Image (cartoon, rainbow, N blue to C red; front, side, top):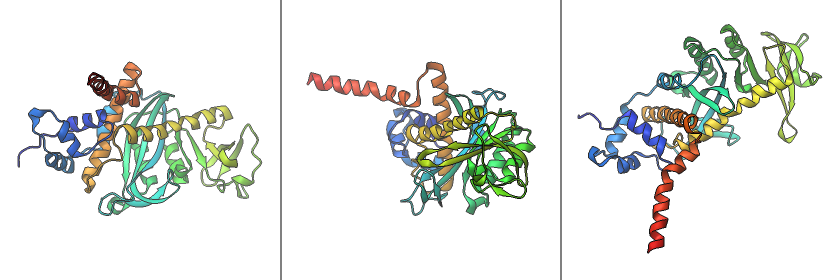
Length: 323
């Protein structure tokens, strides 16, 4: 079999510049004419290539200061409710849908140096039938990778899903502090009492977390009369500081939105697991490129997409006015 004319660079660039259609057929239609690139050739390449999380780090590491930023974690579900044959699809809870759906779960790690400067640095695809790992296993694995790669976060930030005792101890073992959401029924102090039953003052309260040690807890008023509890290992923190750290975690939600809307993150149409993994990895690489351009010319991923299609629309309108 001859070597495929498709390549990682071509496919990644395609995801970076297209804004509506992400299929192999679409790429074959816009590929340079001298390539004679068929959609079957692209599909075969996507099913055989091997894009891995280390490839994302290789690119992202050139864009960040490893000693200035926070390390944020969260997962996202790529909705595949209508898929009956696609690999990597599992039943799981989706925060966006507030229900259990069929989808591909991806755990992402993001490095944020300031409000508008954030870069994906690692990811894992949650597929228990293949490796038996939970999302928390992937979280701890990515923590170890971050340490081995020389990242020194000011704070590790995540929601309550990742604040298990084992996870908190893992963060501490790397010498890092953390800010994470805590469930209202989390047991603290002795005799043990649930967080929701404590009188937590505005300046926070030092408590002894069962199985871990001393932490500081803050209470925040959420939407729809919800009460959120946020804990930290940094005992001298103020409420304003913790609120700032936790609000910065929102950047990873923005990242998921950008991935889906500007890089085709959720648009892979192949049924094979390898093709799906490659498409997801290349979508993340495409977003790193878009963020690089944003730093250079202050252009958001959405503006970049518009700049590409705008000349074609202008030409069509001008032609219509002449006729």
